[in-house]
Image (cartoon, rainbow, N blue to C red; front, side, top):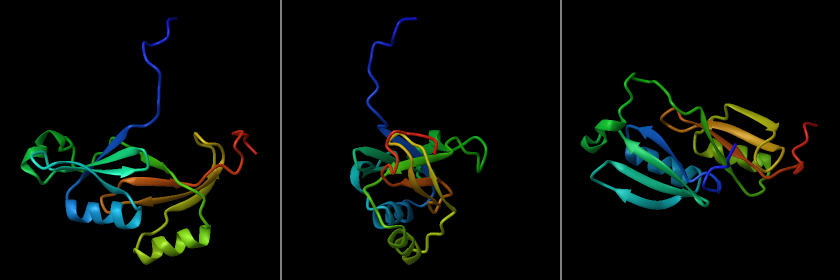
Length: 144
């Protein structure tokens, strides 16, 4: 088998379907601390930076987003996006999310690209599941 003619670098972006752009931007910027990225006003699309990756928000209520409307209302094509973070205190994370009215779906310690660490699972206002993952507690990736 021959290798592909490229090298993998990491996640570039994920596209989330939304139906209220101001609400989406408020969540991603105020709750998660993302910063504005590229804007495509004719498409109803805004991008926000999450570290070195982009989260693309595509507003299906915008006329330029006709091709983004799912064929089945409420159908999903992404399970979740994992956002790697710097170290955090779990109580501070809980307090921050609560202050923004964001419910924690679950907390878990398990493996990821950086090893085993603590994650908080939440949902954005549009039902997209996000995993907010702290740095590795066990960087070798061992399964306990």
